[in-house]
Image (cartoon, each protein chain N blue to C red):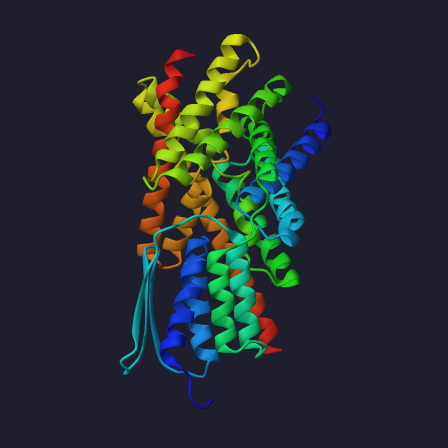
Amino acid sequence: MNIYIQALVQCVFAYLGTVAFALIINVPRRALNLGGWAGATGWMVYWVLFKVGCSIVLANLLGAFAIGIAAIVFARWRKIPVIVFTIPGLVPLVPGGTAYEAVRMFVEGQTDAGIGYLVRVIMVAGAIAVGFMLAQLFGDLTKRRIRLR
Amino acid sequence: MATVDKAELLDTCLLAGRIMIEGGSEMYRVDDTMARIIDNAGVRGVSLFTTPTGIVAGLNNQQYVQVRQIQRREIDLEKVSRVNQLSREFAAGQLTLAELHHHLRALALHVPFFPMWLQIIGAGVLSATMMVVFTQRYDWFDIPIAAVAGIVGFLVSTYISRVTNVRFVAELAGSLALALVTLVACKVGWGLNPDNILIGAVMPMVPGVAITNSIRDMMAGHLLTGLARGMEAVLTACAIGFGIAVVLPYF
């Protein structure tokens, strides 16, 4: 498939998936659309970096960072807590596929391979958390600067 | 501010905290909101202790201390957002303490959820889109069955979590149901790749967000919260994994 069509499909699906998850966890109606864009932004950052050849951990970290920045901007704009955008936005990045592989390996008795996948899940989750913390740091820095002026 | 009913103030503050934790808020936001409510009521010197299973608030050097237990924990961001909004209005002086208390009690009892049919569509769309996003394979043929399996899993787990208080059974039954649907569909020939379908279909229940949030809580210094929420997420993941593992050898 053409790379541009692939990118379009990825972006649309990440947006739709994020909005769909937002429906399940009862996100406020006025935040649905923006939450979807936060998710699509984060996923596209991850996907492009992954295609370029970045490591999974770095790509996840920067993807989560992008979601965090988008969420902070949206939250200040609409005066809604940041978490309303970050939780649904995170859905495409969550290492669900890897976790599933780990379970399958354990069931099939390939414990070593399963542990390998499990370690990858933990590393990706940690990378996402660090990405969010960097975004939060960025948010705190800009907030203080505005207050000082 | 002349006199504030301190018992009611603590009750209001703890109610706000309880609703936020039940809605899945970050702990620093809970602390912050509770402290702000006390502060905006004109009372100085409060000590807060917040965990995902219970919260304590007390006024320093006075005989006012109250405790609340928290038994339900889910993700309901509308609640978090509304408590935040009410707290802002209280800070701006648009609400009195009694009004804030009244609004919070109403909020604790009833929050408008999206209608069930919309949530079902949500579960289906989520399963179908995440199947493609996670596996990075453009497996168009399997999309409908992934959506159906995701909806079945979501419905079963929602229904069971309403009838029983036993934790983690809902996720177990949900993943078992969706794995059976996938198994049947693949045997009949409506589905090609069971791995892809299962990865998509479990998404409405997967606690990936909870795992990431618990790591964030721990990094932010809320060690107890991080451990408690992380443990809950791991047990949920194990329940889902077990449900699928039971069916997986028959593919």
